[in-house]
Image (cartoon, one colour):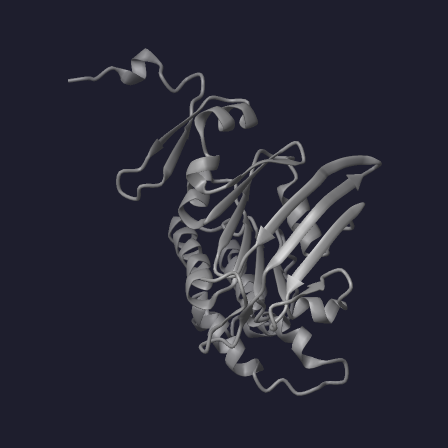
Length: 290
């Protein structure tokens, strides 16, 4: 994939380059993100990882303009190869370019799955009920991509947590943006759907040219899905680059405050991590019985 805008005939989505610089965020007078910089490129997946409280979700929400920053510069690529000020766009204009799947979205009552997915079309409708001719096809495609077609007519409040997570993701896909931000999207999903969601994220980047930024806690999932990883600690990006360059035992041990071993998975050739606790090597667990 090139670093320019990428168009896919299948979805009509145009991938955008999104660059954030000098992002500083404060809570209660104290900085919790310090001068962070991150770039999301068309056709690439960037994973944000780090301990709890390291600023991953705060940085992602700030890039999505849901969190006010003390300072920030945000630029989004345009179709002609230029760039526009992402902070100067109206909410509707920004939402045509960037979609965010947040944690813990509430479940509104009295709505079907299709109703929730159709929420993703709001930037395309206009204030005065402007027609949205591409809407029905976009909703159908989003339902199919997330595997919830058979749930379209079901009441949203009847869904499991994992099902609802996929429905909200479908709503983001129906938004048809060139940048997709996902905050811990594997939450509530069982093993199968975690793997399928990570596969979908890679498909969105590889086949549709979308720029994807995703917060993940599982380092092995991040290594499997991401082209680049940003490792955060105490509100700062302490390393950013390819998974094999960022996920080193020395760096992870220092960042997480626990011994973390790293080897290469012989099946995938990707880094594989293992946090070592006090009880992981007890003699009685290593002994064999006849």
